[in-house]
Length: 291
Ligand SMILES: [Zn+2]
Ligand SMILES: [Zn+2]
Image (cartoon, rainbow, N blue to C red; front, side, top):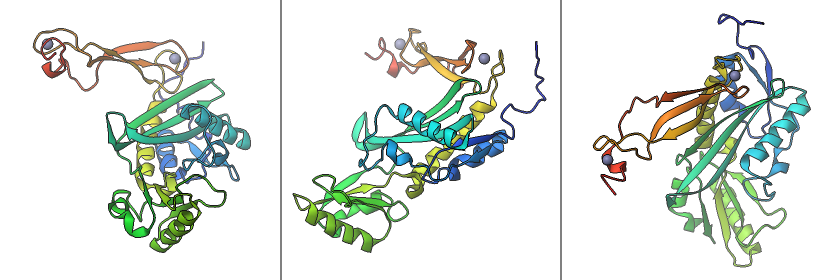
């Protein structure tokens, strides 16, 4: 049996990995993977990830964000002929618990065909500028400009009544561009209105780029962690167990009591008390003390 010592370099050390992006995500993803794992991130040239769907909706995404992401990564891996690939996918909409606030869901996926594994990290966050406004002139945008982070964050303008080929203006960071785009879009729209939307593409959206960077650090750390049983990279949180006891009455609550760590390759699992050290639940979350 082959035994790897702890002093051996990480299995991905000095490996090349593919990142399929048209939107400059290497700015957020390369550094954590290079620094934590010694991995070289390569971006394939001339790849069109927009064929798999766009934020602005000209191309509808087929399948779940994870399925779209998998296709995107595989597109790049086959283009570069690499057996490891990484990619990110975001989706945005109203916050589930409070629809006036926007929410972003970012997924970062690692695929390794050599080991037949996938490792995923996700983040659901209200740290996003996602939003849109229907207007007939620049003057009506008002607060929306500030809230959407313009001009460091770009905007998209299109006719309000739907898609008209050639009438979608993306990556707008100048007042003049937006004024013109609103005018052209509104005059082409059945209701004489234009829709102004936040541009969610990473290179147009520093807030999103920052979230992707944080997620990349998390994923790199996870991939750096080897399974204690089979030494496969990617050991990390795979499940949670609810039932943290109430501080007052001791009954089980819906709060998280244990975290389950697992391997992407073998069945090894390890259940540990939650890592923040909290042992009892606040009675406010107890169905008995606070029904
Ligand atoms: Zn209680
Ligand atoms: Zn394992």
